[in-house]
Image (cartoon, rainbow, N blue to C red; front, side):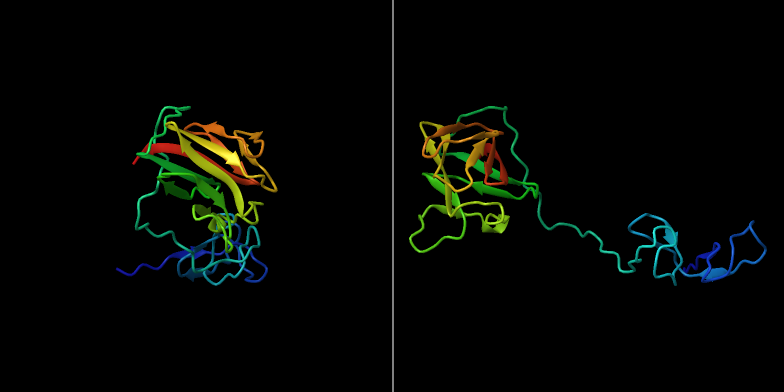
Length: 196
């Protein structure tokens, strides 16, 4: 079934017609109305600007498509849990994007960006999370599992490492718990522990 929408144009100097009830001079218009993505009002198919907010109308609305993967969610665990074994999944969730980086560290891991020749073998490059823009150093901090716990140490980075809002002293280890927040320069990370 082919449906044509017919409605009446309101008063518009360019069209010189008015709404029903305001005058007898009305002109029917056929076609599908276009909804303004800025203000939500419906406009006429031949309009280029919204009559209400005067923003350009977009005819090719960008639609959200279905994902071909499940979202990676932070595993649920009791807050402030500090137990960390070789079978614990470490999940770093970057804010505000929500992008997640799952790791199972078997030894010390260095977080930084843009590895150069001579960079540590255990470097996790955070460049895809705009690390340089956020002031992350090439070798910024280390995550170290030790005695069934996970520790973080700043590597004397240019812009510092913060744990739950407290700036870390360089080369000193601090205990990390599930749900803690790391800030590297201005790159925010939520730390979560899960079962591997």
